[in-house]
Length: 191
Image (tube, rainbow, N blue to C red; front, side, top):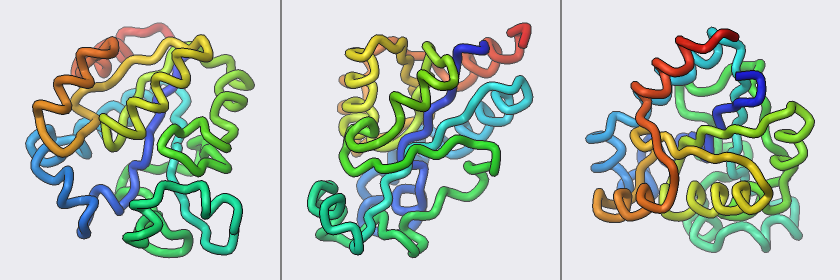
């Protein structure tokens, strides 16, 4: 498990609490019990010393270049804004020892960020991906990392999008695992 990490994409209050973005995924987010499932996976991973990498989207209006490159819907609706609750990590998701991706500005968490560099520096080959939304940021990041040679596995019930049909469609595109399966796998590991 030394070459394994849990990657959390946009586990931020914009998705997990009030507001239009939360409303978009709320039904799937709640029915899939995403926050609870993710906390269970994180607890098991942290107990075994598996690295947790956070890839938030932070929109900084003072960074003119990065701001222009950030996703238009987030800018238009004033989401993920630096210094506001909208950019904060969801309750119970972040711990101080987590690795935080810097410089991200696109749906793909690799765009403008140090994600690939962090994975290489820490010897990570296997990436279990959780986050929002399954059909945009999660999918684009996984495709990008797979193209770069990383083994990415979607933690199906630690992701959500606007409806179950779309969620299932994306799940067919990737190797998947449930949070329960991943927890068992982590607990049985020798690390």
